[in-house]
Image 1 (cartoon, rainbow, N blue to C red):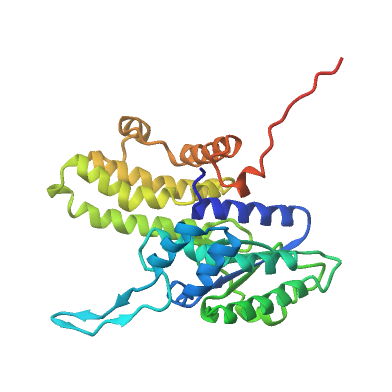
Image 2 (cartoon, rainbow, N blue to C red):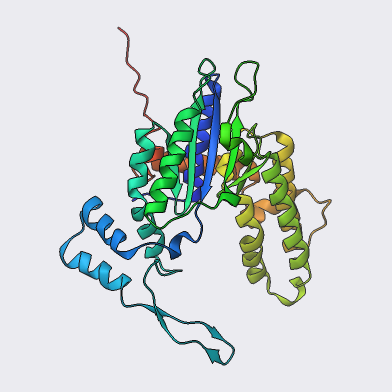
Length: 336
């Protein structure tokens, strides 16, 4: 079974946007966020989804009903504790099943989007909706606006509500013809930079803002870690560096394919600083032997390794279907 992650979701969305813009069209990306989404899931509606949409029945369905019902909650502060109240809606926060159950709760939403011919990708309570804007079609935004109205109506009928303050819109590909893209009521949500599943996106998809944020955050943590280096053994200190710095460098780094050499150099400077800090070597020493001794792949190769890993999984049935369907093996034919 393939692993569904924020990175695989963003890879598909980035790919589709690049396809739209490379063909000469614009693309509009609409990010929807739901208010307290996990807390307002109606239990009876969820059971109905599991039974009618997923096909779960018998003992398995009874198990899910038992998991959801007869729960209570209370508020505890210091030595004070409120009385318990029944937990009539929502899925248990922090449980492994909660994101899966919420995704199943949203299943009917996909039929609304497909009815309007809108591309989408949902990751838990974050919905990414995007559509190409044909240069010759001045009304190509209308299907998206109508779809959004249907989505709001469906959400209202299922005890869910859009968080208008976190709704974000971005147009990729510049303008249609010589006139700016007319987004209608969506214009109020446009922003120069949007944050999609933790990645900052710009209209040109250069990811300069994202990389700047990663570099700034990583150097901040390196400065803090330098203060505790003397009291932490080297093996544990390396683990801490990976937890606070390497994870930031690697998060969604497959999206960095094709970014400028300057941006890659900035990311590499973070890894170099981490290696110098860990080994206690001078920053003027050549970094390559140090990285080799630590068995750390440089940034450029970490990005390409991630791409190769996704490619391997996609070709061998280990990746999500929405990635696997993008790749096809090439079978050359011999000419006589």
